[in-house]
Length: 316
Image (cartoon, rainbow, N blue to C red; front, side, top):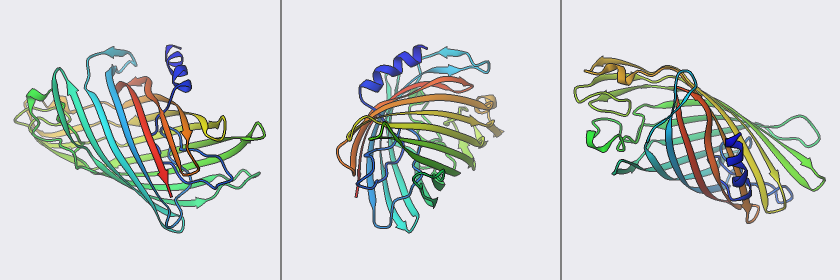
């Protein structure tokens, strides 16, 4: 209950988003999109959008194998990044994410580029009013190992670990349906389902996954399944509330090779549940601001975090 009491003030304050916002018809609601869930509709050919973010994240500890929360002083992160999207062909759009990362712990600080991602979306069908048919958009996403992950500096307390060191290919399906509520207001519901498969990461020395100076081998990352359900309710033409519920399961991570501490790079499968309440202010049909929070509520072998996020969206 204390997590819900923490979320309530955020709903009356401001909000955050790590989802893409898409241009809507002038006679429809003005919405930026919720915090986590991506859209079920693609940008039209010639349309484009730009979305800068600022995420401030505090890692408060970890969840044990028995789902118990264990407090610890983790790495604090500030993540500014930019998403650029464009409609390519009919029903196809493309998004590119360019991220930076600032990490600090026990007086040590690092700034660098983290892993870049690209996403291709294809809209299968469109939401039809007064029918059950929703927007459905298939997604192909690729994450590139552009962040530093090998030969880390031991004195940096892990702050210089910026990337995963592996390519990750994800397939997903985004569903979205718009409902008319209270005669003049709108409720937008989204469901995202995604599955990601990662390549092996070639590791040397102290790395993102652990290890020691003499480490030389490969880390096989576990595949990840993610499901997100979101609701976005308008309050007026410009104001709206949103909330996401996310579930994520990641399979075991395994190391093969030589190291004086090989167990540090093996990880059991993990589960994480998180919530993301938000409030948004839409300047027009094409521009909006969203600010809020994203925090864990339960987990197993996963991190316990709280994030504050600010984002501005402009689509044309």
